[in-house]
Length: 296
Length: 152
Image 1 (cartoon, helix red, strand yellow):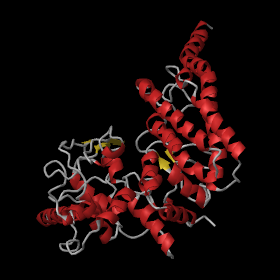
Image 2: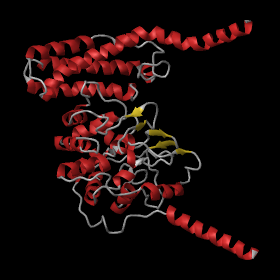
Image 3: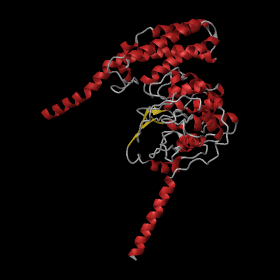
Image 4: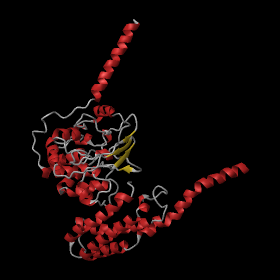
């Protein structure tokens, strides 16, 4: 009787362990899915700007053109510790110059490294997972035009238990979902949704998080505490943000609010990116925000 | 009785430094926030014309640009005494980094002056001239706010 009980317990532990390993495993992109696509570097530049890659991965003191040298080194404090952006320049040793497109797609859309480790979701792959395959291919084609930088990546400063990368598998099972968050019935709203929910990853800061660090989708874009310091990131929902569509588009272009205060904090980098996109893209974001539930 | 007085004295001693500090800086906070408000109001006159929200008026646009230029001639560091940062007192978003980089703050303020001069030159030339000249002004605002002002 005791022996059976013990056996049952062991069996249960083995099953639980196996289930744990299953949940926490990495699932790379299907082989061949991206290799077949041919990327357009010019379109890729738009994806690059909209996705804000350089904003987090340029060197801490970079200005102007050198912001396209993706040497890493910027620090991002959070409740889980401090993340340090890695070198993702085209350097084959310290950057990602030796990667293939499948490696790149796995990293960007699934948060998986070429050697099968999970990336921390400070890298906003939970938004990028909604990217179109062609956008990934175009982005990778543009990437090949970027400079190499030999700065080694610094380690993240993350405390136990979050230092166990395997635990990110549980996080992904809960929060990595490539479904869209809102419906979009016409092309402008679709474009706005691609920008807000995928590329520009607006929800990462403007949506509150659960205690496990996942986005609380029920309060999508409803505003949140600033993850890296004091203050709050404002809500973008129509019941809170009473700016007109043209106010929103003008803000994304000029950085001026309707009462001519200027943009501050990390949003400066976001506006810098949006200012480089076409006017139609800024208008699409404005249309998307105005169409959120609670609006007209 | 004595004990009560001691407690009260301690309470005052604990509470007063912050109070005194806030009082000390009340004038500079009002002045510097007013300075930025003057910038915003005058930028608004020109920006609304650039957007097409209001009709272009050469005289008003020139007056607003002249005001922007006048404010840019103020040396802002006078209004930012040591200790008047967001970590030390309430009612400001000025980051302590300002006092570690006063040269850089000064040079960014000079960039604003240059951008505003550009705007001043073209403010009377018609609506179309405003937008392109506003760009550098906005960039000058952003460049400083990016590093030296806390998010709301």
